Length: 403
Ligand code: F3S
Image (cartoon, rainbow, N blue to C red):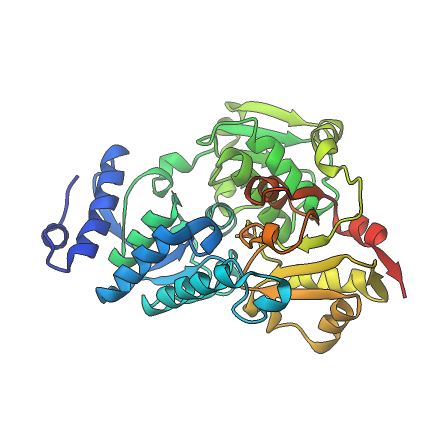
């Protein structure tokens, strides 16, 4: 790999041992994938924030970096933590979790990160179309590549951190034009009825194709940004997909020629097929302890839709309704929007999410979600907790009453 004189000096330790190790990690990553050089970035998003998933080793690494005076070089946002910074006690988060979690958040802050604690950082600080960035968090990777048209590989927590402190990434994978072309055409011959159906469609297709396939979807409707976000979240969960196209909708789909599309292998998805795939996930046998919206974090439009649906209703007894979102989204909401959520018994929760919070230690056993990603990950990451999926209308119909 060609390295500049400056990069060579960083590798030799001119800027300290941590920067040298971080750059070495990126160089090795690049060499494995045949990258010829490193490129500069100004924007990144880091995962590995929740103490539940990052644990003690990450806490130690971050505090070590702080002690060495390391600072991020990019505008770096961070993923949800395992609890909100305020009000965690009333949600039932145990103290032995909260203390190290606070230290992780403090360390990111001292490194110079924007402590956004959200998996939808693009809704406040969006990268530009065509810009090269380094994003971790699979759903955000899929969104910025596909819907915004920025360029990022699917980074893990360590390499996103390394990219943030060096301001560099290896030029490889989805940073290259040729790796962004579609490898398969997905014809959807029905109109997915809700954001949840898009999420399930993503989950279904992600499980059927290869991760380098960059599926191109042919849809008979124009999906909303929220629906695209859910589609990407599902694809990233089951198939590690980092880029998709929607014909006539997403930015890079405009460059696809008829000839190119005709040459692609094609899969057709029917409504019956998706229904069959979703059947088990949709099965709700008992009353849930928790209804969780917001995986990925709900947008302002989604918050409005939820609030509208909840107006004049109340959640059934002994069910909590938590809406996971970001501070940035809540700051846009007016009092009447928030009131219908509160009056229905709902709580807006920031800084965390239903998957990375230690819900198994918070007295929760059964969760209903509107997201394929949450439905897949909750049972895997929260021992003894079950999850089922329903769309917003069904949830409101079944688990709330008129008041
Ligand atoms: Fe976001 Fe947590 Fe889901 S980080 S995408 S809400 S698993």
